[in-house]
Image (tube, rainbow, N blue to C red):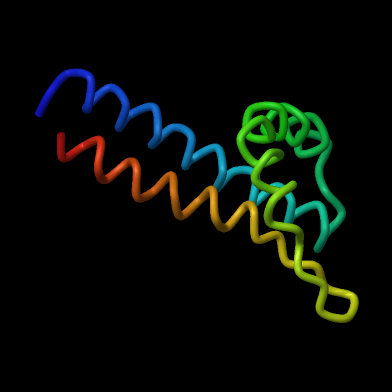
Length: 91
């Protein structure tokens, strides 16, 4: 393993964890009365992940199914980050 590949793998792992945190915090806010810390942590997590998800969202619009909207951009970024992470760790 190269040092750059390992470092990039760890950075992508941190990004995947941020995406998981974003997913959980968004669902907590939607499904329940969110604690105060969720209201404070959510904008911070969004600020870290939105620069990557935003441009993808302009290309992959959310799919509307009745009252439900499925964000394909989040899913695409999550899958690509996992693939890039596995490639980086294999370098």
